[in-house]
Length: 225
Ligand SMILES: Nc1ncnc2c1ncn2[C@@H]1O[C@H](COP(=O)(O)OP(=O)(O)OP(=O)(O)O)[C@@H](O)[C@H]1O
Ligand SMILES: [Mg+2]
Image 1: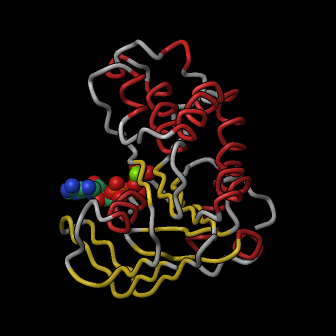
Image 2: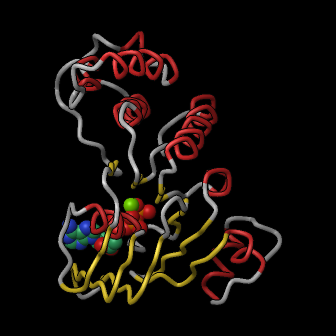
């Protein structure tokens, strides 16, 4: 369970994140959507503890969590070394790693310096690194934003299977409708630093409460609105 109360983070006169109350239950999968600059990444950074709020509380009842930033951190060393960071000397993890490297198409890139990978290859690499461990909470910031369509489909399926197998709570920022609906049961629409819609995907699509929610979903070409 994640519970947010009276959370505030001011960056400038133009932008303050302001969330009075938000609860995400264990095992829920939530897509975080909204225009550029609406506050999706800021919210994920706050929940993950990457940045501190000015005021308010974030209560997290979760043991093991992973956060994948929009611009993932890459060590300037081989892909092999990058994906092994944090790996314990554990036979089960070694077996998992081999399977994950195959699934994410990284096998032929293992000796390449990760700093020289393409944007999509970097995303596949940090995604692979995350899959090695079992996490109760994943906070993913546009994890497939640079990934081509072939890999995107299979990585979505891998993520969905992972969340179901591990009963993982997922919060994922995305600009892609299909990704949100394939992977998540709930939607948060952010606008100017606030959560303006939150609920089951189907309910929000049929009955957005706000004018901005309606307009935004129309831009997503979701015809039920
Ligand atoms: N470190 C910072 N210092 C000052 N302003 C910031 C900082 N980080 C973000 N902002 C501003 O806060 C606002 C929200 O940014 P944020 O990155 O959360 O948006 P976003 O919804 O993730 O957008 P995108 O879809 O482009 O990823 C933006 O106006 C941005 O310019
Ligand atoms: Mg962002």
